[in-house]
Image (cartoon, rainbow, N blue to C red; front, side, top):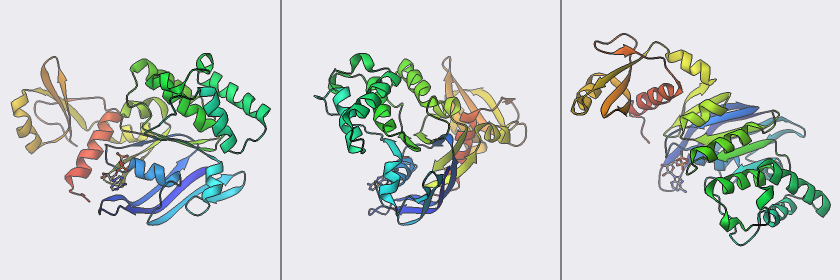
Length: 300
Ligand code: ADP
């Protein structure tokens, strides 16, 4: 199974070109869609989840048990195999986790109440909420709500799962639990994880894309993308007032405070005076791609 996207375009009525000729092939496993705020990630996620229309293009979920599904045309078919955890996940505060999941399961077409109970209990166990299943959702912490969100997205054993910015607002322990849960989702599922947090992709994803201003600007295995910039990232500790000067003369990709001093990373094919080489990581890939794309002035 795989999801293929071709020529996907979306311009909002205010003139913002949120998706510009997006083309991607997303295989089974965990796929990271990385980009800064406003890049177009949610627009893409909502389009795949059939919650908004594209202006043009094609999205196919290929090799499913019922053949190829044309996402933009066969909305009911895709909804039956889709699990979606949106960025803003509202819960009914006065309803218990168990009752809500049971309700969502019946909406997804599981009509036998005994079967629903088995499914709901197994999911509550899986996301470690069985002990609070009678509690109202309004009493849940951010991490518990996200785990509940995953449980509802997993009802009906979806083959395509979309998770939009899942770890924003979670503390490190909750984030870790959430990551472990996501990584347990079956191998024969396409999981798209949209995030602006590079570490989420480093920890979880076997494949990824970077999106900026509605364009896909990098696509591949994280390790290959890191290898492609190895030997081209250099670092230097500078005084903060010198930053503008460095920006004028180098491609400064990131700035970090280290013990009160400013450390910069630059992208350069050749050694630069005063800079030392650094072992590149996915953050360097991300920031070098984003800065060079935005410097090109490809602004919508
Ligand atoms: P991301 O999820 O990467 O933060 P979005 O897809 O939410 O990005 O937004 C992409 C661009 O489209 C942004 O410039 C945003 O302001 C704009 N946008 C998103 N939704 C709408 C909308 N409903 N109407 C108009 N502009 C929108």
